[in-house]
Image 1 (cartoon, rainbow, N blue to C red):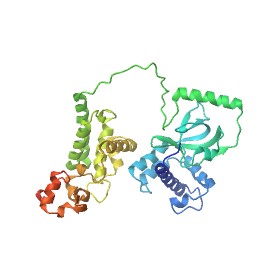
Image 2: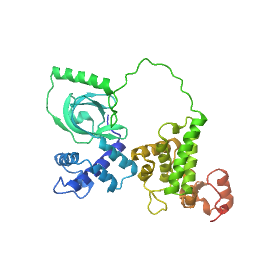
Image 3: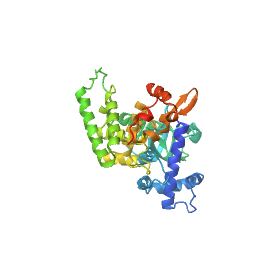
Image 4: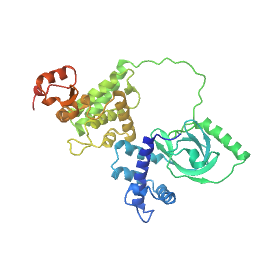
Amino acid sequence: MILSPQDAELFFKLHRALMFFVNQRLQAVPDRPADPDEFSLLSPETLLKVRDAFLQHTDLIQSFIEENPARLSDEELAIVGSWQHRVHGKFYIFREMQKYMVFLSTAKPTVAYGVLALWQPFEELIGPYLPIMTETVLLPFKDMIVYDGLMTSYNISFGGGVRRMLNESYKEAKARHGIVTTLPMSDQPRVVPGPKTRRVRRAPSKEETGEVLRTIIDMIDMFCKEHLNEEYAMLCRKLAEKLARKRPTPLLRGSPQSWASGIVRAIGWVNFLHDKSQTPHLRLSDIDAGFGISASSGAAKLAAIRKMLRIHPFDAEWTLPSRMDDNLLIWIVEVNGFAVDIRHAPRQLQEVAFSKGLIPYIPGDRTQK
């Protein structure tokens, strides 16, 4: 029911950076801390003042993303951007489940949220006796819901009548939307499944896959022609074709625009396209804008592609040919237990490394431009 240590550390890093930015803009705390780390040392009462000021000026989220004063990555900015879907209010902390704590909204109609604690279990925060009324802000975080680390609890005892009312509200909330575990929640009511029937899934035809692939490649070619170059377009087409050959192909799940953006993102990520010292260079979020999708959708497709194909920075398969000579990781080969830059080794060793697929070509044989 709590985040992993890595996720908790990431959440506090992002939330601290945003609240520090908010305080700089609104001056909710007169003696302003010098940096986010110093800001995090303020008392909970002072942090609440900043949080409450933020709730009156939530447009500052977009300002934070555009200015990016903390120099966050595109994936981190996408998480902060998702906080526009926050839910603020009073809740009944109602029931402890295996994966989360159930928060019931006090506003009608009642909604049941599955919420994870940050680094300290809810039992340590509020005690073992439920229900408890609290006021806090629920935030989306990756595919989960967390609270913002600031919680005001009310010392109220609930009798049998209130508990029965909460039980009924909980049942009604589950019937409407189930337990909501991601934000924003769907506006559509929960569909109660009927009797299960076995359905045989039809495998997509080659024509369907080919049509989607051509659409994605056309989008990529147009984008690369306008913003990048043919070298990027070549690798992006290669990556799109590799995804199309997977069985089942993931390209049929999701919009062609999101896959096109994710593919260009992936090639750009490997080759550090965001580095301003390079030509061309682009922010990864600008790629999403070019395809007309949100930064969070583009980041999700990039993460999916990296996971499916195990792509990593400096990946030899996806490095631009013009950057191949500068990619040191491609040329470091272990010889007799020692790491050697094969470019400076005898040609005989280079030929052996090439025959084993350890290097993309023999350096001396490449045509110099």
